[in-house]
Image (cartoon, rainbow, N blue to C red; front, side):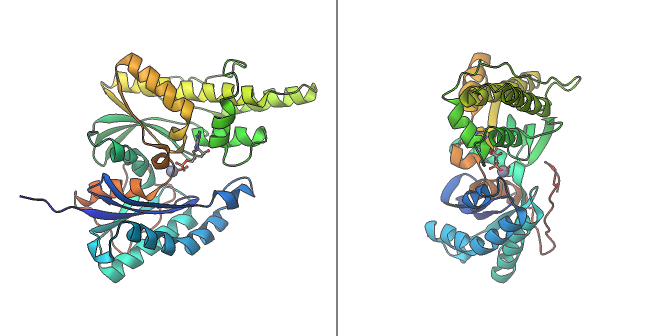
Length: 341
Ligand code: KG4
Ligand code: ZN
């Protein structure tokens, strides 16, 4: 018997990207529209929540319309609407949730609330049609750094977490300190290619009794101290060397702990997710180390690593086919945890 294709509209507004996409059966992309607010927030050196909310309100309708248009679909073709309801900034989240609820009610289309971090993990399904749980996943974004075991679709176990800064946050802070501005990750990534990653030995924090956890605040302080000392002594700093050495410290820690988690838990597959997963050196180093350890490695194309609607539609699909439905009471949950509903 032929099964009907499930077409889901995914809506994402948790931070500074207004995004919508249509995905079939959780894996086949029909459209992917992203309006990035980066240029506006760059003026302020970081995301200003109030400005983000206002921009989402302005852009959400045209972005959704374009996602439907690019997919050559009408409202009637949709089987469900998936929307990020947490974690993230409350104002921005409310714009997506409110819009999704309004469309769902007006057009009688089922609604599914999606966890943003679970969305990042599901981005791996788009270009790897054969990937199925269980697999280990390193999620590194601006707000989160986790090692998560995807036990089954929609079922997650957190093995490691950060004790302070998220990896992306560390990139953003170091970028600011060396005068690169916002958003830091891509700028450090680019500058680091011109530097020597072994020029300066920055610390790699080890956390007692928590072999899969992270801490980036000591590393951050160490880089800031290095910059201050140089300034006080009137010495010129090689910014590319600082960027490359800092990046190497982050990458080594993220990679080695994820690989350890995979090996210790008999996982032969390791995936990458979140904005930091678009870092070119992290991808290269992970690829090399997983090959050495005989672990299969997955990473989404950079466009699916940073925030997008495709990943939300994909995660929404696996919830939808399990029977999950949300109603008009769906609300934004800024501190939503992985695996919670
Ligand atoms: O997943 P994401 O788009 O938004 C959140 O959910 O937070 O991640 C954004 C974070 C930012 O901190 C940004 O600096 C970082 O991902 N990022 C990168 C790169 N591209 C984005 N970090 C390192 N290298 C990159 N190429
Ligand atoms: Zn994100």
